Length: 277
Image (cartoon, rainbow, N blue to C red; front, top):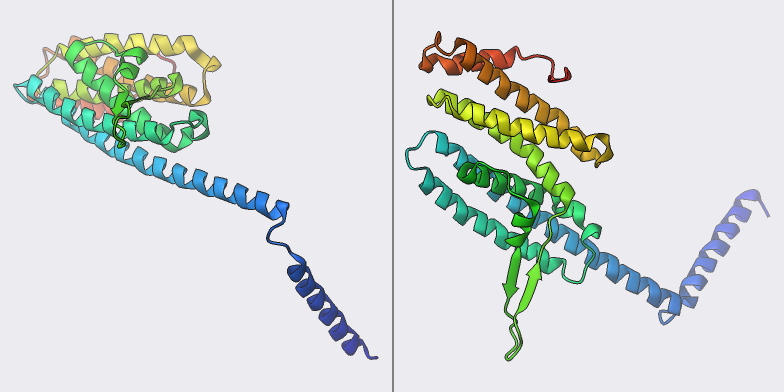
């Protein structure tokens, strides 16, 4: 037998062995049944993960729209009207968070946490911004979680309504508050551009308190929090720079030119890595 014929016979024997192994595969085998169960569990988990990602995106979009709306308070005479409209938007965001609570019913929250954490952080940023504009204080984690209680009526007759709760983690709360500092910095510049020279000094003190609070955490907290601290210092530096300009040169610069001054100073701002003293 030549070498070529021997190779053909070898391939034929391998093919026949493959057919025999498929024929011998028992669909009722306990191993095959176990792997089918694993497949269903993984498919269910992946589908739930994708649904949570979509809900998180919707929460992010609505929360950003609420933040954009709240920035108008520096240029409108009726602030309460803006806050009331923002309340309605935040209520719709909470309903979407209720959908997350339904998806996580009976599940481990941390198993799907990465799927919805961006939306939750954006919601914390929006609701804390709204709370600061109305009360000039920082909303607590307990106050935020107290509003995330949802009542779902069961479709069956005679069944008791189901109460669902969603608890925002301390890490998501801290990350949302860190993002809030950027919005407060923008609010500071907008206030000055509209002739309000008192708000920047209020924001400066408030941001300093937040910065001091994050400094207590230092490197002992989650990695994401330490990354946000860099942006927080940038925002605080820009607000303090604006307050310095108002205090030292405010009487020299006309109000309608303050915006140009702050824009130019922000462009030539100090190195953000330089510590703030």
